[in-house]
Amino acid sequence: MSGSAPSWLDPARPVPDVRTELPGPAGRAIIDADAAVTSGSLPRAYPLVPRRAYGSVVEDADGNLFLDCNAGIAVTSTGHCHPAVVAAVTAQATELLHYSASDFYLPIYSRMCSALAATAPIDGPVRAFLTNSGAEAVEGAMKLARYATGRPYVISFFGAFHGRTYGAMTLTASKAKYHKGFGPLVPGVLHAPYAFNRVDPDTGARSHDEEETFDYLENTLFRYQVPPSEVAAIFVEPVQGEGGYIVPHAAWLARLRSLCDKYGILLVADEVQSGMGRTGRMWAIEYSGVRPDILISAKGIASGLPLGAFMARAPLMEKWGAGAHGSTYGGSPVPCAAGLATLSVIESEGLLANATEQGEFLMSGLREIWAEHPKTVTDVRGVGLMIGVEFRSAELAERVQLRAFERGLLVLECGESTIRVSPPLVFTREQATTALRIFAEVVNSAGT
Picture 1 (spheres, helix red, strand yellow):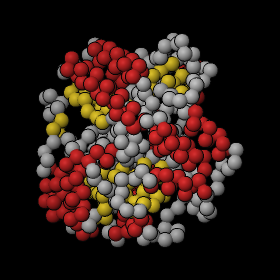
Picture 2: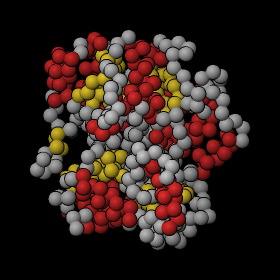
Picture 3: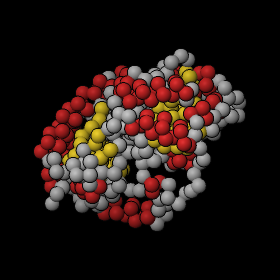
Picture 4: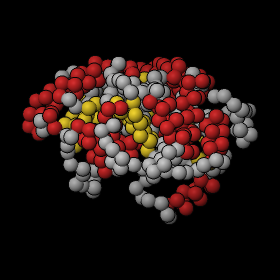
């Protein structure tokens, strides 16, 4: 990571370095204040109270240092407070904080759209719409797909996570609890099996029947529920995120593309978590060679500022007119400045190559841990710095997550029994070595 470390981060101090109980006294006071006023719906993983951060290091309210292997849920792509991102945000904040791009012409809005479109693995000219979040981008993509095709139905997959607003939540099928108490959901959304969704109850091993997804679509869903001529789009995560960091074969995605082409269905790639270089390519779908019709981004797009986007083949987005979709804050100047700086840093600092290099090192080390603890770990999978470690039970995964936190290593659960390892793209070999050492120690003690 280019630039000098901030003065608060003592280079002589090891990372991680936990010096108080967790949470410490300052952290406990903040947690108590939080409990009195915030929504009970917030699903806190463990009592981390971050005060400031830099690169892959987080300091909490009590001065403890943590090694960040979740990047704020795969968001801080260029690391915390990258100097180039901070400089871009600061410069923009002194000139213009806000003017709505829905009603006026913001130069930085079209610059951000152009820079994103240049990266998109989409055939032909590309247009973009900027949002505040991934869920908003999913909602916009759903609207566009229905409007552009004139078809009412959309399909997503079991295990999918697309967000928590109503349309996005309806597409989501990673946990029933995300739907509990909120029905009826948005009509016209159907689900199908995702690749590698089978789990052996005895060994925990994952397997994939190559015909399952397509047999279900052709012989169940299209036969009994809805004709394919009324399906607007299939939403797919090229690597399933919250559902467990599940990586399908390239052939599975290619076959999905072929099915969409057969029936005139749009293929929508949700790259909110897998995009912006996390897998070692700018977009995870690039590994398959598949070209989506619509692509969704957020999380790492602006290194921590609220920004999302959906991009589409220009003819699709040219079908709807003024007022069909808008956003007061989407693509606001400061997040756009952060987004442009993020794209620049990813290229200038070689972060795609670094994600590949450090990801391969982490995968190798984690697979060694798997080999040493086959009764605890049942799978290690991933690509780049998007790695999932699956455990034999949800209880084991939760125990490992908490014990890692107590040792100063920040990881985060996903799926039913998986821990994701998704550090910032600036993660170094030294930090990766430290993370593997701590993780091995934690897994070794997890059964006790």
